[in-house]
Image (cartoon, rainbow, N blue to C red; front, side):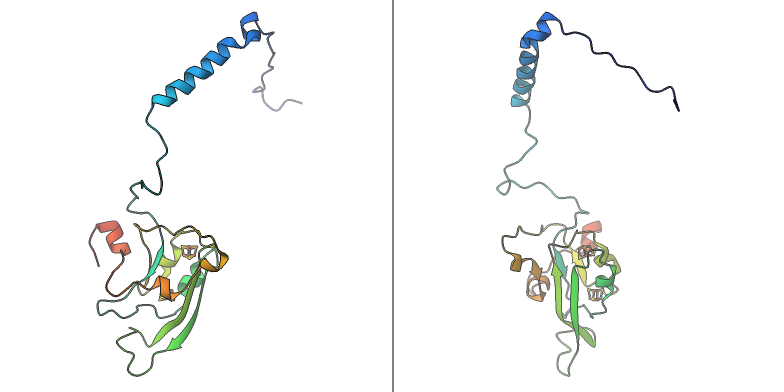
Length: 178
Ligand code: SF4
Ligand code: SF4
């Protein structure tokens, strides 16, 4: 039983002599190849050449410090909860007396890890963070990995160096550094 009248009955026409010789089709194919040979290439010589990234590009994560150089993260776990890939894990610790110059809040992340093999760079951790502590940089891509033990990024690679501040989300959208 037909539900609609959209079905078309197709008939295969017999091939002409020229079509059976395949020469016009080969010439047409060669013509297309030659045309593309002189066109601007769609590919680039990466990593020597790099494409300009969008301002909204979500690249490698960074754990930010505040204006005084203290770690912003308070190990609240909201980023891990928001992460659809379950890529984030952490261990919280209590700030001790004398560590006020290191950690902004009374609780901080003694261990903070992101599994880059799981991460899909969705940016939900950045959106969930109430302390503006985690950002996905728009000018740094996650590198390629060759060993499995390279894919877990700990604080040693996530916390921004004190003398080399990373781009934040504010800069991402406004161009103003913070
Ligand atoms: S970018 Fe997305 S997948 Fe990656 S750690 Fe953040 S929330 Fe998880
Ligand atoms: S990065 Fe932000 S959301 Fe994640 S644990 Fe630290 S303070 Fe909480």
